[in-house]
Amino acid sequence: MKRFALLGDPVEKSLSPFIYNTLFKAYALDASFECVRVPKSDVGAVRDIVSVLGLSGFACTMPLKRTVLPLLDEVDADAMLSGSVNIVTVNNARLSGCSTDGLGLVNALKNETGGICGKSIAILGSGGACASAALAAARAGMRVTIAARNPHSASEIASTLPVDSLCGICGLDELADALGECDIFVNATPLGMSGNDELEINGALSNMKRGSIVFDMVYKKGGTRLLNDASSLGIKALSGIYMLLEQAYPAFELWTGRRVEPREKDLLKRALYNKMN
Image (cartoon, rainbow, N blue to C red; front, side):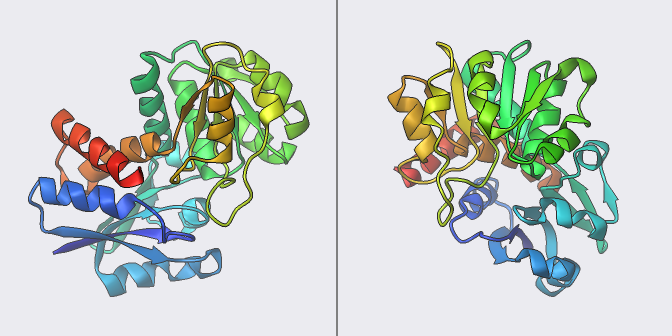
């Protein structure tokens, strides 16, 4: 049996095992997926974990998406540019990393909007998920604003984007103005996860124009404060479940060589929403 895992901290409430194990079963593959807690201080043990568990591949979540990079034997160009990896394939003890986060966000938005080219997006965050999402959004023809508490972090992410796709960078005190100009707002921070403070920007959300979308990479039962606030204002609110699914499909293909067909995507989506509700 091939073994795969999610490495990071926290991982206890992740739905990744449900997604991948459902897909393994659907395609009659002798494989399993589990969660392994690896705090940032233990990132140096990743190669040992891979060896001891006999992993054929693993997914990274925070806080490893950036810190795992030096341990990999190769990293694809986009992941290197954004400085973030979320999927690693193991082949003869060689670790090859890539990022499907950005693709997951872009495809999730395309599915829900019908088209995103030419639209403006503001992404709040300073970590690997934000960097990957910003690069993918720019490549998809979107105009990107990076918002972060730390202007230096925002500038670093902005520097990876094509110049003609960058609208600007801003701090939290300027977020309300930025949201007034964008079509889509994305929370790429851990705020809203269990054990973390909620993201409370109701005042800024009220600046968003009609037809806007709020997308939270965080997912949990009952929704996050951000998504509930958006819904109360009549703004379309999308959970991180959409992105979680869309980033898993290319990872599954990388690991197994099998492409997830539309029928299986639909069945998995229904099963996942039943599980969440």
